[in-house]
Image (cartoon, rainbow, N blue to C red):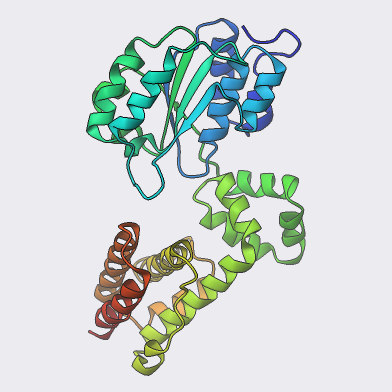
Length: 337
């Protein structure tokens, strides 16, 4: 049972913004002792899935000390599983490790919890191996599977765990939250409201992503400017400038973010050509409209596909230098034809 010194659901209510129906259902189930031992938490990146999972474990923990450790991610009774360094999937060996510890009595808390992050990366073998634990979990042991899309899990896994869906927020809700909780966003709303609106548009309905963009604003703005420079060069078919263009190469994450920005900008250019009036996502509506007039629809569609392929290769851990070299060739081909 939850600690009597605090109201059940107070932790969840303090860390999850809005999503009132979900919070009420989860809190009521915990208070009545009927919260399920296996659940799937679904939502886009940075939508609060891990925060909710920790909050649920903290509510179930039974004492304030354990709850505090759980929320800080340092409780020995709560395991957070993710793909190991250098790997993109969670394999069957991870499930074997869970089995080896699941039946051991908890130390600091009344419960044990296994939070499987990126659960949609579990191999088929790993998902099949965890079925028995989901179906018949040890006493006071909880499993929470965090995914972007529950449909990526096996049907047999989904049938054993109800889905808790994170809320995707409207632009107005995100902007209100940012202004109320971020001094930088508040300042931005006063001095450059258009910039704040562009950040909100790029967040994909995620407050966490919007906060990340604000916190990393300088780098994101630099990459966005570089994306516009690259697309201007390509639209003008300036081969000489393309040959010496300074592609971001500090690390794989920076190049990936740059390519994602380029793809978003290309999509805005495509939308500008195909619709008389539409909401832009990249953040420089006038420039995207200007560039779109220089490039045909077929070229834009081919360019978007090219950038998506380059992102996929980057995710497969191909060398950055090789991808940069290939990028010049493939983008030139896409825009030159």
